[in-house]
Amino acid sequence: MKLMLYSLTQIRKKIAELIKLLSDHNSAFKLVVVGIATTGEELTAGHPSVERCLKEVSLQRMCDEDLKKIVLNGMQSLSLRPDDDVVNKIVDISAGFPHFTHLISLKCGEAALINKNKHITKDVLKSALDEAVKDSEGALQRMLESTLRVLNTPQEYKLLLLTASYCNTPEFRSAELRDKLKSRFNVEVDSKSLSRRLTKLTQGDEITILYKPARGCFQFTDPRMPSFLKMALNSDDNEI
Image (cartoon, rainbow, N blue to C red; front, side):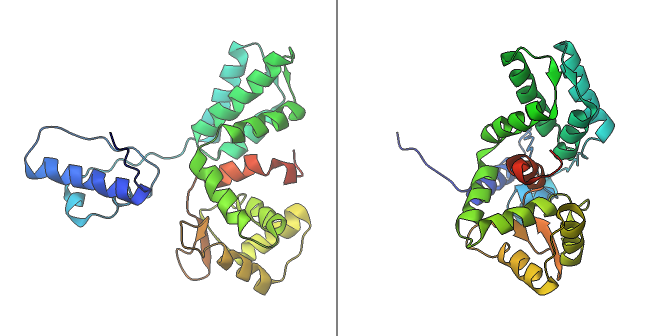
């Protein structure tokens, strides 16, 4: 039996072909395609003849209060006592994605139970984030690693990416990032150098960590990346 390996784009195209085939034969069979994307078109590789067969249901990110309930209810079930700062940090890192809330909370709970300590402090959270990164989706890890591997000054780009992860809107401009670098890390970068570095993060033969949705604007290719960066680069975050 020969094992066939497909790229993500090829998989999306094959899903689109299957949907088209079922539609052409008036099949009563329905597919539920679940994924992280802005539109259903992105999940089917933009196959034009498939769009009329789709019904899109967009799920919004969870609010902070609901994420906080996930943390507190889970901790309470194990009689764990998380500091308020820890809970707020988990919610902040999650950025509306409950997957990260569950993952980080799980690692906090494991660390507490192993050390026989019911109190979840910032130190526990820090070690839990390291473990959460190891169990994170491989695609996010590979994207960050492949990006940093080809850069001459990876440490500078780490700080740049970490700062970008704290932008409150999906799209951000270099001026906003420059202000955040100054206010959050007291680092000053001239606008031309910053724009040049951001543009470099959008260039490459493979899927890049950033892309330009419009002139002068930048956005993470994967909306989960800011959460992953906050975990993976937590040693650079002076708030932990």
